[in-house]
Amino acid sequence: MADPSQQRVTKELILQAPSAATSPKMAKMLLLLSALLGLFSAARGQTFHLGKCPTPPVQEYFDVTKYLGRWYEIEKIPVSFEKGKCIQANYSLMETGKIKVLNQELRYDGTVNQIEGEAMVYNLTEPAKLGVKFFQLMPSAPYWVLATDYESYALVYSCTTIIWLFHLDHVWILGRNPYLPQETVTYLKSILTSNNISIEKMTKTDQENCPEFLGRGS
Image (tube, rainbow, N blue to C red; front, side):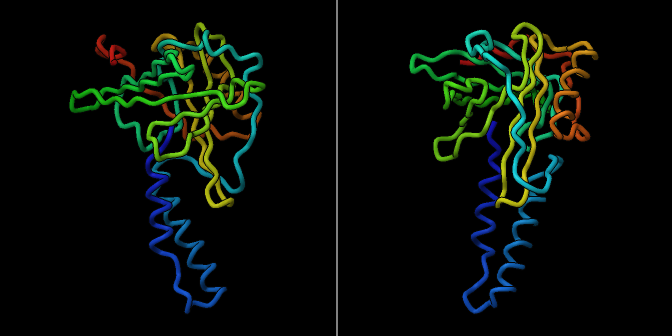
């Protein structure tokens, strides 16, 4: 999934860039401060860490056709672009060979919010590493399937490196049903921690009393 807030951070950094009259040392300080302020603004509950993104191993012999269909969000690291409950994703194959992505959620005012995008595999030797794009002018966001049995659970990881100093983690635990056994959730979280990916800020997604019409988007 792509986070539109990253574009706002880039714009803020451009607007706050120091003038030519500023000393080189002060310029570096101002740029770093601007970056940090933008980073805190974009995070909004997400987890960020020093250094570049980690590279955890992904699902071996990933079969994207088996992965298609509806997935319910079970747990996640909170992201700024998800603000509701009953969150789910539907994946379907397009004539172009790309994957149509339909994300839906029920807002707390009773309205349904949805967004469509496209996903594709960029390297056939690593089919579990996909890229997802929701807007034409935005770069693709990493969508790495770390583990799945295709029938009950999936663990998805995405990470964005910011100015080569920090990275933002995104994690989703998904289920074919709105609930997963706790032992399965624990197993998936152990994959994250064994690869130095923090699970401290992960939260459960409310899947109670969800309308049946979710998932019927175009």
